[in-house]
Image (cartoon, rainbow, N blue to C red):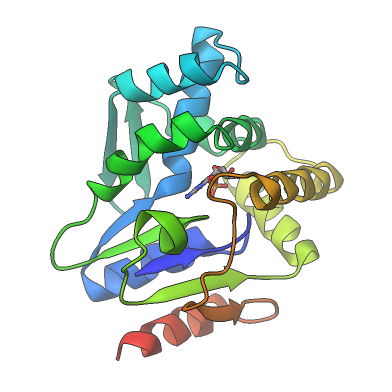
Length: 213
Ligand code: C5P
């Protein structure tokens, strides 16, 4: 199953819950782009240097530990806390526009496909990475609600956040993700459109599960 949509639509929460209820595996593809962004920032590589970023993508060693919460190790170091920062998301969306980088990460993402099933969340899961997925969802919400959710998530994690700033950053990131040439954020024609504005998360999870049952 693929769940695509813009930033802050609730894809992570919904995908994790659906995967848990079905006993399936979970791929948070955004965290792969975010991990690469951290590697780029740490190693002082220019985010515009396509070949250098692609080489880094090829050589980075990522491990995911999916317990109740996701723990991510980059070359053996726990980077979970840095992953959530808006600055990481912003750099991620810059390097995500580079075709060579997407090409390197394609197979890494496909390797997550395992029995009995996978819930993959991202921007191009249904359109590019898993075009043959049996179930596809496009999850969205109003821009205001998405900014508020992201703000609450950051505050809960103890990360300093400013609502107005987040609103601007989300707008900018959405525009970049939708307008890039390679694998832009689109709604696959065979996806189920789900607007989660003003809906309790439990209801959204049920709607997604109903597609399968
Ligand atoms: O979903 P998340 O906010 O963690 O993703 C961070 C960035 O990674 C997105 O803004 C997007 O540019 C990029 N991304 C992508 N394709 C995916 C998942 C994430 O381009 N499948």
